[in-house]
Amino acid sequence: MSVIIKGGTIVTAENSYRGDVYCEDGVIKAIGESLDVPSSAETVDAGGCYVMPGGIDPHTHMELPFMGTVASEDFFTGTSAAIAGGTTMIIDFAIPSPGTSLLGAYKQWSEWAQKSAADYSFHVAVTWWDESVPKEMEVLCKEHGVNSFKHFMAYKGAMMCDDEVLINSFTKAGELGALSTVHAENGDLVVELQKRIFEQGITGPEGHPLSRPPAVEGEAANRAIRIAESLGVPLYVVHTSCIDALDAITRARLGGQRVYGEVLAQHLVIDDSVYRSEDWRSAAHHVMSPPFRAPEHQAALWKGLTSGMLQTTATDHCCFCTEQKEMGKDDFRKMPNGTGGVEDRMSVLWHHGVGTGRLTPSEFVAVTSANTAKIFNIYPRKGAVSVGADADLVVWDPAASRTISAETHHQNIDFNIYEGMEVTGNAATTISRGKVVWTGGELRVTRGAGRYVDRPCFPSYYEALAADRKTHAPSAVKRG
Image 1 (cartoon, rainbow, N blue to C red):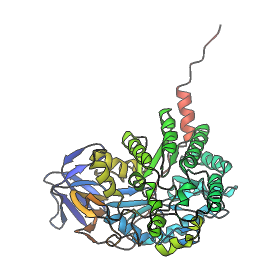
Image 2 (image 1 turned 90 degrees about the horizontal axis):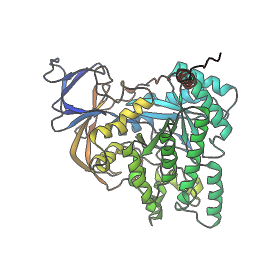
Image 3 (image 1 turned 90 degrees about the vertical axis):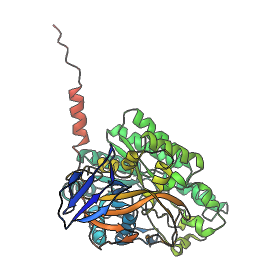
């Protein structure tokens, strides 16, 4: 199976240039002009378009069991929708219940993911601690290509980690050369604020953001960062949504700490007015954590992204249909948290980022694929247009416009948080593992075509730190 992409402008995180791209057996084999390729190769006309690495969404939750129900999107429908939007890989989360096996969760999610239409990998959550957990973390790293572990600082009584778990897990991850990631919200504060707000008679979706104000996120982000600093390990903060958390990340990075920040596309363009809608259904479908914030937070998040203080963009794609949201009809605390967006991330970021001058095309590639690939150690296999890289590519038409709607999207949910938004800049053709899987507005996906992607660990952070200290240690002074 081979394909030649002709006449486009190749855009990477570093530069852009004219050239054709030839792919064979799922890998990029040649890049240049007037390439000599087999006559049997499928030709994709990229005239007037950009040829970029397929997007990588580092934060999704397909068919997640959560809050008494299961997310409506499975790995086939979710990765198919991603492909329609130009995303060719996701990193999902295997989440064990407290007291259960991390390896067991990894195997269960791996079974569910067999139906994926695009490539995938897993972060594995640490939700509890005993002597078995570090042993399983080591097996996951050394035998299953896992190099990141997730920690929920919220959802008390379900999956929340206290500081002792964070310290133990961060330490073990550092020994293994794995990256610790956190959902930064103070779960104890959330529970107390939820109680107070509900007792005031506020029971609808508008109560959700009131129970999770920016300070709740900022405190947790700062605490996790300081724990990581004390232990000498890197940290990745998921779905940064407010100035408070961004400030904590910025302070750490300017101080030389290795901290990464992720921002969701929806947090960049949607504000908290959605919770005050007279349409209960619309307000309910925006219930996610962290919640949408006041407009000044969007402005700050854009500055964080353009300045490099935030490095990656994601969706936290976790779909619940209206019937599921109605579980919290009379009590916002019982409403499943989550929104969709895996199909629309790339277009929304192009339109509101590149289209407004906030991002260059190369910066767009960086925040939608290359940075994620580098941070999670799969670059240049993913996130690059280079010979030897996986043939995961998107032919991007910067002039194509569409109106986002639940009536036309491919996501398995009956609502779209971007409903009615017109975006210019869309995926004309998506290529996954060298196969054209989206073109002319039609999906050509195959159930089970996606493959699990191993993500090797880095060298132990403690060993690297010790070596660095030894290298920069002052010379001994001899005294006579």
